Image 1: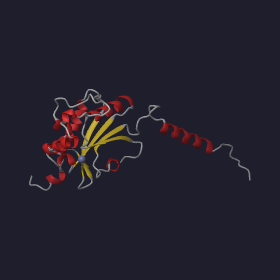
Image 2: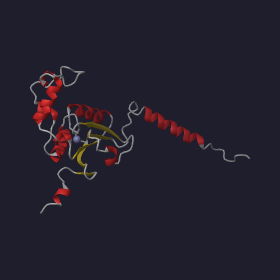
Image 3: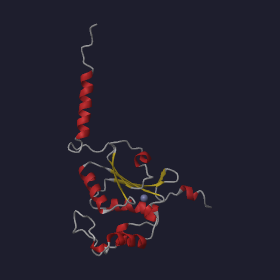
Image 4: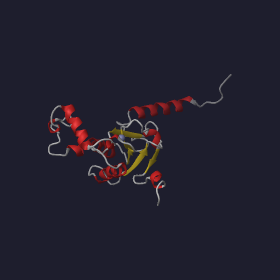
Length: 200
Ligand SMILES: [Zn+2]
């Protein structure tokens, strides 16, 4: 049996597949951004399915997680690099109900950390790779970032990013509170389940 079709249907498909593989493997060197030009900053809490909650697939976003989903110096470092060099144009902050950052007093946490260090926290480098970076006269409680109100805290992280000199104004920044009890996201301040349970 002879093949009457002279075109080779395999070649273009194989070429596309090879190109896609090359793009995937070398996307940073080639300057290819994430598929959604998105950075997500979220709490490290194991109950937050970040990708699922935001409907994200592999390759669509960069995800930074830390205790509390707080805008720390290293979040600024990471955000500044990705928005200025990797064509990231949107940042989403995800905080959540029942966050561990609301589970103890500042004093209790600082006491526990000082006990762990075995010396005053002012003498402990913040970053072992840069021992000259220490708290100096800064507030230890501020560095730990304990939180009283998760909705206010979420809005504050958004404001910190929006107002930072290294994050251009053109970058879209939004925040959500993930409700561990319902598995849903809400905008900070929109506590629907509480509001519909109370007299107007
Ligand atoms: Zn948390």
